[in-house]
Length: 191
Image 1: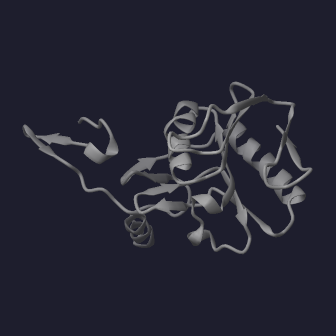
Image 2: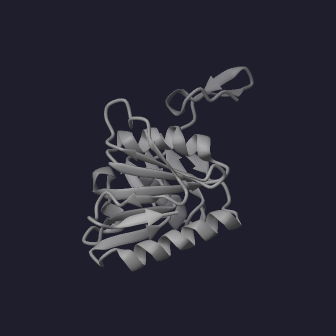
């Protein structure tokens, strides 16, 4: 099998090349409703290709619990703090960040990139993917602030201000230093 990128992926069968069909978010929802895919965290749709996500280990889960507690205790009720929501960023891109914050007045199925105030990925074994492909996808879909919490490196990588070429280099904030929340004046997170 050769997968140079999702849009030109080829599958070699008996000396013939076949391009597998690209899926849509609607396809993934239909497969979930039919019981083909499990409901909840487990898969993301990356440029039409269904990608199995890594299992969450104990430090990963503990960080998400701490972050959820902080955001729920700190933010006004006008903000939705969603753990692992399915974000339908385009027809062929559905991501599930560990935490996503958006306005409470938006139904989760209607959240698009520009609606997202902050998307967070907690990374222990997926840092390259979270800082690379995922960062490019979030930027391409207009997510203004995207943070990657590197558990192994003890650093929060704060991406902001997406442009045509993605995000500028992220600001690296070591654990223990306060990071101002970009959408709430006077609030800061210390990991």
